[in-house]
Image (cartoon, rainbow, N blue to C red; front, side, top):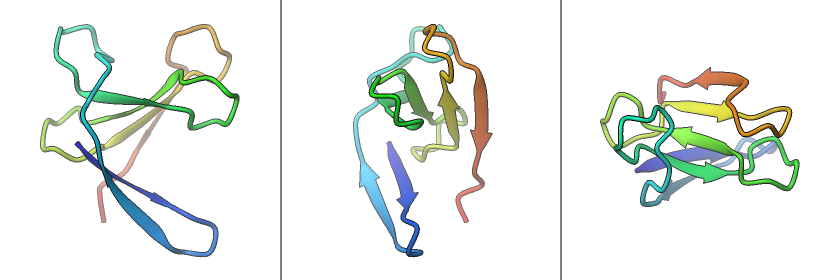
Length: 77
């Protein structure tokens, strides 16, 4: 799965990783665990829900309870 993360200076880096998380419980690994909200926990994910090989959702567990709280999308442009 590929994903791109940007920096405050406007630069961005493209990453390629193997999915390691099943976000939607269907038995297929379509997400990668990451600490998006900088709380020190790998409880957030970047997810490829349309199965095209590129992350299209950032899913954040904002309160640390192990359940998704916020979904953010990106069209990849």
